[in-house]
Length: 171
Ligand SMILES: Cc1cc2nc3c(=O)[nH]c(=O)nc-3n(C[C@H](O)[C@H](O)[C@H](O)COP(=O)(O)O)c2cc1C
Image 1 (cartoon, rainbow, N blue to C red):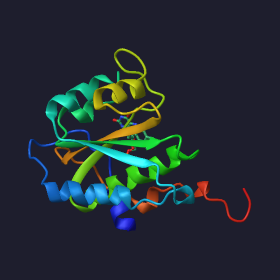
Image 2: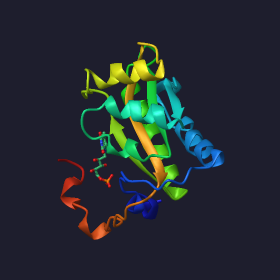
Image 3: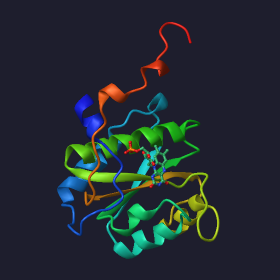
Image 4: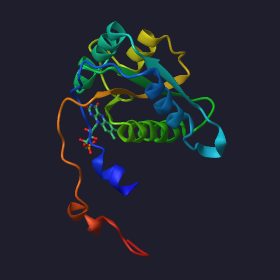
């Protein structure tokens, strides 16, 4: 697991190659396997394969959505905010588990933040809801862009970890 965690780096440039349905399925299952507070499972996913829709999603974010320009597919990570008071935590866990499953399958990814961000016309979350037809009671934590990596990133090195951030027994 630690090896996978060291290898996972944000990738924002992807090859033209499309991902197989089975690969996408595995990534989606990783998201659905995520734990949730009180087992309320408020998280839902919107899988996007359509290039035109990915282009629209890119405009929902004024900055930091470059990963959507070349992504093979994307997944919007949403959660029913009326089902759980900690839907943001639940959705975040589902998101990172999908990124890790993708990495294990050789697929790169980037988390594109939508909550509390601005798009070309206004609030990113509102814009994503419009593009994807998501009801108002669903929060949009992020859209993850996925694809075969077209940029090299060095894996993390355990030696460079800041161990002073770890406090033993007391801060
Ligand atoms: C909560 C969160 C929000 C992020 N938002 C964006 C984003 O909007 N656009 C983007 O390109 N990358 C985004 N990232 C990716 C980070 O920039 C990236 O994880 C960070 O620079 C560390 O690089 P690494 O993922 O290779 O370890 C986000 C990551 C997290 C965890």
